[in-house]
Length: 483
View (cartoon, helix red, strand yellow):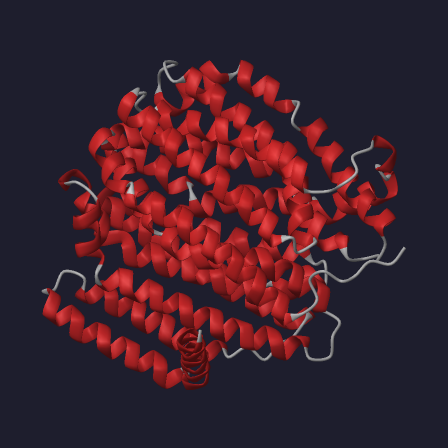
């Protein structure tokens, strides 16, 4: 039986992105405005311990998933039938069930993991809880992907909103009233993951059956996904390994400050995560269309324009934002916001320009580019963090993401060339990044002048995008007036 293409139009992309952005806006805004509560009731050391445990399991989760999340998206549209997509879902789901059995061994090893991370086994219970959360996340992953690939974004967003609001409520309960300390955020995550799997299961409208597990399809998926496994390790080295070097060189307090700065990046993630969840379906469904490459280029320009403005705002006025949202103990966090935000901007650009590699199923290119970025990042971390601490960790993260972005762009152009306006992106991205670093300690009047200059520069380079956004806003305002 033929199925309707659920992700094939740009209208569906925009619609799905808007739904996810609005839901994420509620979630992230609530989480963002709870930062003063976290920084008041959790010391930088407690926050550092929590982040180190969470970052460790953030490494374990994708390693055990074995790249099957990417394989799910890559193979989902290869055949247009209900029967085939049942095979895709169940092949991934039962593979996750088997892979999660490794968690039992890791839970048994929790005291040793605690000693490895902290030179004491006192944090073993928190590690056990965090590892159990990993298993639950693996089980729910195929259900969430199924909703996304069917473009059922309202259902997906409903789960996100409900689970995230539950997370916020539990965090307040555990942090403020029960005073669980560093365990608070970890235990909240465990409970919310349990809630998510129930909700995704109920809303995904998919048939679970072992008979749909297809060994031939499994072989193809494993072949596709295996190069992504070392990519998981490299991504972890690129994005999270600096926390452990900071912990070793400067202590848990510094890791806590770094963690607070990282939480400000969630502002940027409101847009990027929402878009990319919808864009995956759109990109794979349209890769063979005649005008696909032109659409991808236009989408990149629009996404970049919106995200670079957000990064620019927070980088210039980070000192005031951190002052308003945290305590004095965490004030140093503002000095690393430009590097973290522009590093996230590089990641966003990389995601879009690198889709051609996924289309061609040349995942070894991802491995090579991320390997270069991760190696450079770790070497620079070891060289610079001992003397420069936080600033070095953030700057090397930006450098690593920039290298990955450029490498994947070059590789993707070889296998699926698109006329991305990369020169404009490089000029504005690097110019604004180094300008924000240069003026972040200046008085606010100077920074306001520089901020205005940056906005004018962006509008000059992206007049067409700015014009389209302006016309859309005017139409919306007129529509509201008529109502």
